Length: 389
Ligand code: GN1
Ligand code: MG
Image 1 (cartoon, helix red, strand yellow):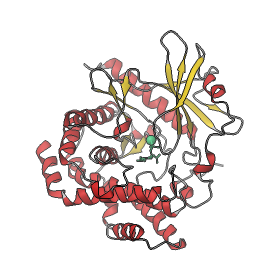
Image 2 (tube, protein in one colour; image 1 turned 45 degrees about the vertical axis):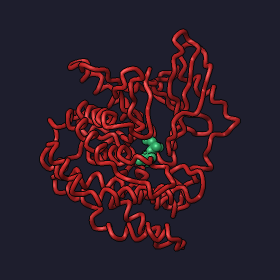
Image 3 (cartoon, protein in one colour; image 1 turned 30 degrees about the horizontal axis):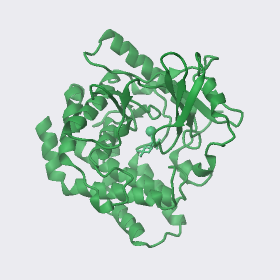
């Protein structure tokens, strides 16, 4: 019998433990886990790394002559119910890109994170408590940033996403598993939202009322990309799924973008989800964790920079329809992320890690304010998209 794929609906329908209760057991010896992936040298350092909202990430340093570092991650199996499929997609992706780059080398640096195998030649290690661990190479001499410094930085981020898409533009999406069903399907999030709303006693604080109204006013528009997909205007392609700005790695010396990391959500989708996600994170100069909602603003110059960089690589595989939906993609993914944060707030914070109970509510407001700023600048954004064609 085949197992039904766990969907995002299951995560929010309350049949799972809160991710907060699954924090690393302090007694669990991380060194034992890291050792599974350390083929040479011994471990001299393990520290928490980055600020991911789902998985637990560590940077491991070895005492070999070059102080090799690698990324160790515990996959959140409450969210990613089929972690083996993630590893399969990642291996397929990296092999494809390696072959492409061997056939047609680029004239500048571009690195792909590699899956590191255990000493037993497995792509992951499962602990006795069921936790699922995997290791990935660290992109040497690189760094990432939560917000963009200037337009040149924005161009590099856009270039990185364009290069990522371009290198897999000939990989058939049907070869990739759907590792997180419903991910970025905005109308499905709305369905979950309506279900949760129907069974939740919602507080009527001004913040909550703002979110409820914001979503109510945009329910019919929210299907725009899915309708375009269903009518054949937008094709299914392999996508990254989470190309936010801090997943782009920059060479510490040249300042050029050299990699796009965090490959957990590489799966079939629309490139529009990626473009929207990159722009909603890159053009929000206040960052997605701000509590100063009034300062949230979508910066059109950074938008132009990201799109210039993106289209400099991606223009050769984008169609007229692709261009026609760019504006909506930008606004939709900000709206969708706000909706996802708000649903999680209503559901009791079961998906995204939170630092306090209203954290997801605050994050939702940031995304809705950003969507408002995008809407207010619709003409400017549509014009700049047109000018870049
Ligand atoms: C999550 O865990 P992280 O930070 O890589 C989320 C993304 C959101 C992002 C918002 C699988 O990514 O979709 O855009 O938080 N990933 C998943 O910061 O839901
Ligand atoms: Mg991610």
